[in-house]
Image (cartoon, rainbow, N blue to C red):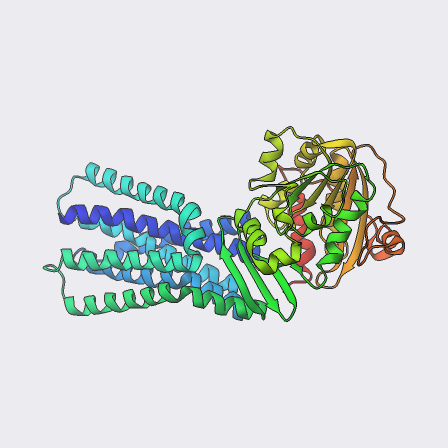
Length: 503
């Protein structure tokens, strides 16, 4: 019976160890961007720390193996359980020490986890388990535990519980292993009451954190955004937060501002109308991204538009902006319009598997801050998109800032040209973002900016439109590399550009 408990412990501790690694990687990717770099360095640090822990385990005396295993379970449960909360509050309240705290916690957890399996194997070996059976069973349950959590984490744990609460949950599982080990081997352990007391205290701390984690996250986000949070949720893809201050609604994705209701009309008028005003015959429009429905709102103002297909990855985004009264008022119930079809899937995959043609396309993705987003700004993606747009149609692309991120901006322009299109870059000032940029692309190499608009506009007119397509000396064209999938140069340009402005 005791051997089975130890084998079962391997399954649990393997699940917990991988969970902490995934939580650290996901949180750092959310907050710092560049998921490949974050996961690579965290995995490297974690595996190195596991090696250190495995080496240190040899100094544990044979008679102390069970006692030290219990101590390790309490330690990794406590540190791993509170790790996400510490990282989140560090980022929210202090900012700069986040990266140092991240790697300190990853190393500590990795070192503790590295000691677990060697100690379990020694405990089983002491109970006269054959070596071949010992290695086979331990590694089998170790890998099964890793498989279980790798499937559950993106599908259930992260979207349903959130990162902070998930960490507390796995911390409690580690402490649970410690408690059942105390119970199963109570006849072999000294200072039994003290061990039970310590384990119970750690379990209480973690359970309290699990119960209050939503409040902790709200406090942290309140500190980050400085505004009243009216909606927040974690999805398999991102963290969505909507804040309100007086009459200003703001959407944040992974901590990055997406729009302010006070000036979003400037952005969305500029994104949509220079293209659609030039296409009075357009009947069908494709919107990629734009799950907030604000670009869609502008498209639906045209009476000639008969159908719009909106493809956005995250159903939580489109659901919130289709059902919450304050958000529905902002996008004028655009997502519920009978002319609109909303599809929640990856835009690149949808384009590859669909042969529908459109008269115009509006591309409103978040900035290319990660390789997952960078693929949506690549030569293959734009080449595929071009095949879905009429030869005399137009594609409008959100393209980050030509002032703050000039290398990234002109790389997007170069990527569209590499995909076989003529480009017409333009920009405007949005108070919430500063100088912002877009690129119009034409498969047929024809376009002239509008000199008037059929619809009433809050910002656009002949003069502002003319100014948008003129670039001052400090934002002139740069000759940049197109963004190809094998190198993702755009993501590197973007990070390098913005690093100058972010401490």
